Each structure stands twice: as C-alpha cells, then as structure tokens.
Image (cartoon, rainbow, N blue to C red):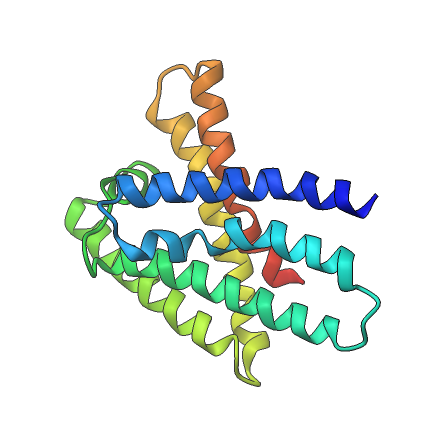
Length: 183
C-alpha cells in the first residue's frame, strides 16, 4: 500500500514541479519565481513525509519548521517580485490597478510596501513574536489568492469556462499561502 501511496504523491509533485519550472522559464529565469512556488512544490512532499513519519516524536517539530521555511520562502519570493528587484510582473500591476483604484505610480508604491511587509513578516515567522505576524500572513495569503479570481471577474466582461478555471486554479494554487500559516 505504501509504495502505491508514494506513487500517487509522486505524480502531482512532479506536475507541480514542471509547472513551476515552466513559470521559471516564462519569468526569464528569475530565481524568485521558484522561491515563490516553494509551497506549491513542497506541500505534496511534506504530506507524504507526514504519512510516512507521523508516529515519530520529533517529526511534529520538524514539520512545523519546514512549513515555516516554505511559507517564508513563498512570501519572500512574491515580495522580491513586488519590490521589483529584477522587475515587477505586469500582471501584478494589472491586478492591483483593476482591483484597487490606483494609478500605476500608486500601484508601484503599494506593491513596494506590501513587498517589504511580506519580507518582514516572513523573517519574523522565526522569532518568538511570530504570532503577531502570522495573522498578516494568513490574511494577506488568502486575500492575494482570492484576488486572482476577483481580478478575473473584474477584468473580463464574460468569463468563459476555461478563463474561470484559469483564474480559479490560480486561486487554488495560492490558498496554501494563507492556510498553512493557520497551522
């Protein structure tokens, strides 16, 4: 049974890895792209490890440590884009200006501020004060996930099935950014 379970988790893990590698290529090989996808790539692996080692006494602490690392990496990767270290993706501007009544310059400042907040909260996740910052990660993770579908509804006159699935799929991919900090 376990070998079949490993196989079942290997397939989605590989598909998510290939999806992330495709995003890396489309980003012009910006390393923050893979960092941003750390939760997407790492969660199936952690789930498999949880099933495999859940009875070990030290595993719970290790699992929390790795969930914190993956969450921090996802927020930092996203922040590096928002701050514009290499560039700010055009879809960040499109989503921000469509959902919020902001000009491009205002959207640039907004993205810079939330990028800095993302990095700060990701770092603070590893301090004794982490409970104060986890609430931001939960809220912002869920808001930015839902923003994908909300943007799709606002940006198009009529969502077709494939368009809705694309926007909803992006929401589903990013919901762990807000759900994992709850854990």
